[in-house]
Length: 332
Image (cartoon, rainbow, N blue to C red; front, side, top):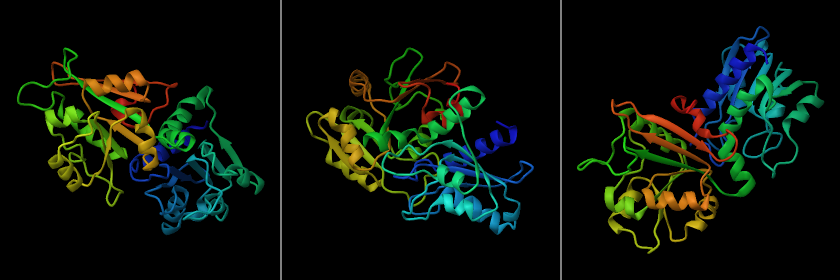
């Protein structure tokens, strides 16, 4: 893979990652357009369902800047769509430009969409490359797959990707000191809120609610404007949840779902359109989620004695996880 293409993929992934959490039920996608010398002319990302896709965003930027005549190569994290939904086919949008070389990170994983854009582009004379899972392209292909992991899992199963976030003190305990609700650093708290922003739902339990009264909304970083309401899934065997807490959660913008059967939780969230959910709860719920295998990646934040926390990521299947999109977790 030429260095210019690698740089363009990195730019496309970064642009797509800025909108993770705002695009559901669509996937986050990024696109970079290069000239014949390998200079990036524009980068575009899909912002939310119903708005122009990444390829069209990048094309429009080139057009507005008077650079479209120089457009030579498109680099896109996901195979351009080849069907008409709320927007037109991106394959045809690319063909309406001078672009005749296209690099694709991942083929469309959606089993409900027939016919990918790669074939259409090839049939119309484009030179199309798809990243391979081995060799020098493997790392970038894995990053593109990680970007799409929740969407891919959702389209194949109808259930969300579930991330567990667990915070531990230096003694591997989950109970904060008296008078505090956390023992991690400010940087880790910022990370937690960025993760919330990226997900469609937060899963917790009544034990955590009764002990900490957590807000679980996005506060330490700007949230995506005008995004759909997030779901707060509360697990409780007894089916009883404090009404005052429920009212406050709804006032914070949550759609609340109470779950008395944890085995049914993935289906409940999937039916609500959740593609990525994060668990923020205490040891009892986490132990049950682990025992039942109801997780896909697991982030452990361990507080360090000098105020610098340690991050560790476990992944159930190969090394694909959307947590890799966060710079501090890329090598965890």
